[in-house]
Amino acid sequence: MKSPAINSPFALAVLLVACVDSGVAQLADNRPNQIESLQSDENRKPLSQADLLNAMLYTSKAFRLAEQKVSPALVTIESYGGVSAVQGRITGIRAQGEGNTTGILISPDGYILTSTFNFVQQPPVISVITSDGQRRFAKLLGRDDTRKICLLKVDGVSDLPVVEIAKVDELKIGQWALSLGVGYGDTSPAVSMGIISATNRIGGRAVQTDANISPANYGGPLIDLQGRIIGICVPLDPRSQAVGAGVAWYDSGIGFAIPLDGLEKVIQRLKKNDDIRPGFIGVLAIPNPAGNGLYISRVFQESPAAKVGMLVEDILVAVNGNKVNDMLKFKSILNGMEAGTDIELSVLKGGEGTPVNLTITLVDPPKPKNQLDGIEVPQIR
Image (cartoon, rainbow, N blue to C red; front, side, top):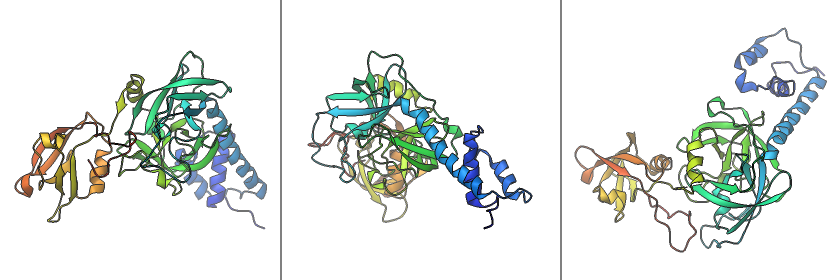
C-alpha cells in the first residue's frame, strides 16, 4: 500500500498537531506560511504508516497534557438547599442548578469563576472541592447575567493553583479548543475536543466553539493546547437573556465561552457583590408592516422608553446608529448591553417625518412574579 503524501489533508493535520509534543507548541492556525510550504513542496518524502500512527498518538497526548496543566485549577462545586424552580425549567441532560458543577480558580486567594446556570436555585450552602481533595465552603459574590458568569470566594487560603490565560487577540478561528467539566460528579474532568468557530459573538462577549458545551460542563473552562484558559463555558443565545437560553444548542456544535482576558473590570465589580443585569428599554415591537424599522406595539409604564416619550405607533429605525428591521437584530444589539448603559434610539414619531434621536439609560429588567430570579419575562425589552 502506498503511503499517503505529505499534502494529504489528514496527514498534514496530524503532523502539525504532532509538533506540539516536539516542543514547537504552535498549531496550524499560527503557522500559515509553513503550511503553505508543506503543501507546495513536491520533493518532501511521503509519511509512512508508522509516522501517521505516531502523529495520531501525539495528538491524543497533546490533549492529555493540556488537560493535566489546567486540572489543578479546577474545582468541583456542590450546593445544598435553595428554592425550587416552578417555571422555565430546563429538562433533558440535566436541570439547571442540580448536581455537581465545575468552577475555575482565578487567584491563589480563592476567587472562583463559574456559570450562573449552576446557581439558579440560590442555594444557601456552597462547598467546593479543590484538586488536592480538600472540601471548603464558599460564598457567592456578584453575578453577571449578561455573560452568565458569577464569582465565588473561598476564605482562609493563599496558595491555590491558577493557570495562564490565553490572550483574546491571539485566538484564531480554526484552532483547537478543549472543554472541561465535572458535571456528572466524576473526580476527573470530562474532555471534549473541537475548534474555535468564531470570535466576538453575543455582543462581543463570547467566543464560539464546536467542542461540546452543555449543562455537564457549564462553569468549566475552554482551553487551548498550551493549557491556557480561553474562557468559561456558559449557555448563551443571541436572541435571549433567559437563564436557560442556549442550552438547547448543546448537541448542535454551537457552544460559547466567556474569555477571561479583558474581564478584569467585570471581576472587580463581582468582588464588590455587584450584580450586572441585561439592559431593559420597556417596549414591545414587531416588524413594521409599512416598511423599514420596528413598529412599537406597546410601551411599559415608568420604563425608560416611556420616560423619553416613546409611544405606540412610533417606528424604531436604529439603535446606536445600527439599523434594525427585525426583532432578531434588535435583540442581538440589546443582549450586548447591560443596565446603566446609555443608548441612542432613532425613532419616527407616529411613524412619520424625520427620525428623532432619543437617549435612553437602560435599567434592570423587572423581576417576574412567582419565578426564579433570572428567568426572562417573555418578549419584554
